[in-house]
Length: 119
Image 1 (cartoon, rainbow, N blue to C red):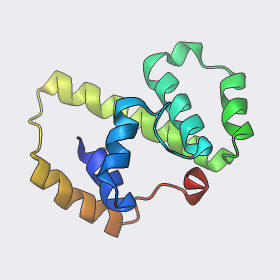
Image 2: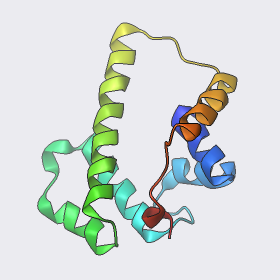
Image 3: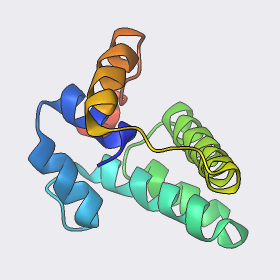
Image 4: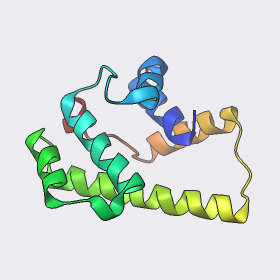
């Protein structure tokens, strides 16, 4: 699990659910708005040149607001940048114990998943 997985586990209080999402969000027991947002994030990360307005419309149709869609796309883009920097500059990986502590700090500072994705 990563920093983000640790934060999600701490936020949701369910590491099993986070593990299921990480294994395959398409089959994990999550609400449809979250599944739709994750599908969009996957495409942003793996095939950004193939993104279309129809991709965003699918997420809207699942009940996700434009603000939440923008947040998801911005976060995905930032993660791609950070990962590329980490790989190219050979940044050291943090231990799981540090991830958990950073998760606690992130949640204290307002890192949240919008409620609309969890309903």
